[in-house]
Amino acid sequence: MRSRPFLALLLSAGLAVGLTATHSNMAMAQNLFAPVVTVDETAITQFEINQRALLLQVFRTPGNHLQLAREQLIEDRLKMGEMRRAGLSLPEEAMRRAMEDFAGRANLTLDQFLTLLEQNGVEEETFRDFVVVGFTWRDFIRSRYRGRVQITEAEIDAALGAAGGSGSQIEVLLSEIIIAAPPPRANAAMATAQRISQYTSTSSFEAAALQHSALPSRGQGGRLPWLPLSNYPAAVRAILLDLAPGEVTAPLPITNGVALFQMRAVREAPQPIPESAAIEYAAFYIPGGLSDAGLAEAAKINDRVDSCDDLYGVARGLPAEQLDRVTLPPAEIDQDIALELARLDTGETSFALTRNDGQTLVFLMMCGRTPQLDAEIDREAVRTRLLSTRLAGYADALLADLRADATIRDVN
Image (cartoon, rainbow, N blue to C red):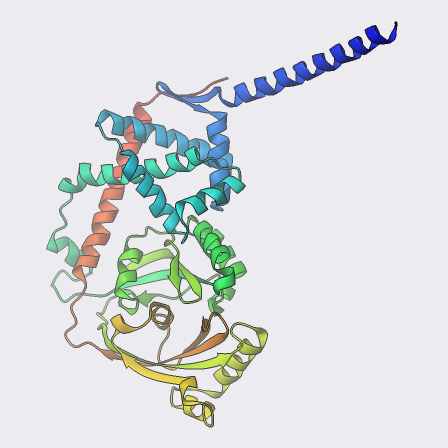
């Protein structure tokens, strides 16, 4: 008869412990959703901060993720309040499209991207809020201030450093990364590139170059010397000019790889450098791709050649298709080849690109550039850069005013 009350006592004790643990967990959950910061009449919870920090961690954003998450969410509340007062909202269809576009930068569908985030503990709502605020704010700033920004021809001349109209050419100081991405590693390489594209510090980008880049410049943290903007493909120029110092391009898919560039500085060259009407280059194909054997063979060839003509000796007795020597207008050159040629002078070489799903290494050599006579400076590219800079200044000033007028306090 004593066993029944004893068992009941054990069960009741276990139930009490279970209820205590449940209440404790509920209290912790409630605490997560309690306000920790208020921005005027809106609250930010610890859960939101934790989620944003996880998202920043997935993007490999440098810095203290929790602190950065708190600051970003405060700014998001300020931006949302201003857009709400302006009567601006993003329709559901446009919201979905913005999320799909963001996922597409990583060469993933939205469902694939959300699955990747879920695996790292990030909820869909967190990603949605991050994308929607950024997307809507950018359009809001453009619609609000675009009419106030008039870039004159005189300002373009001044930016080109040639008030008299003779013109000078824009040069860019970049850092570069190319991540090898043959089909078996394409998704992983793109995910890595997407994380790097969120970096804003040169030290973080340089560390990533040392770890991930397939280019010889990785030994210098991916740093390149000053180069004319016109060396780069036309489609890439606008992307580069839209970058502020420290910003990184979205991943640029190339054959069997993905490229990234970080802007370090922009300047006008004291003398104009004519754009190229045509570029002559040679490509010698080496079996083995980026394997040790392939790279060793490329290094041997590099020691033997000083000009493109020397490659004919290397290719003697080999199938004709193993060496290509072509002269093409810049617009007709494959983008991965064009990006490599952009940093090469005549007689310089590169062996970072591959073909045949990564199985063939491309030994690339610059033969020469044919200058375009009476080349006109790309004034529209300069206009776009000046416009982006001016709009960014308006955005920063507005956000500073909103912060100054807001009541922001921590909730104890």
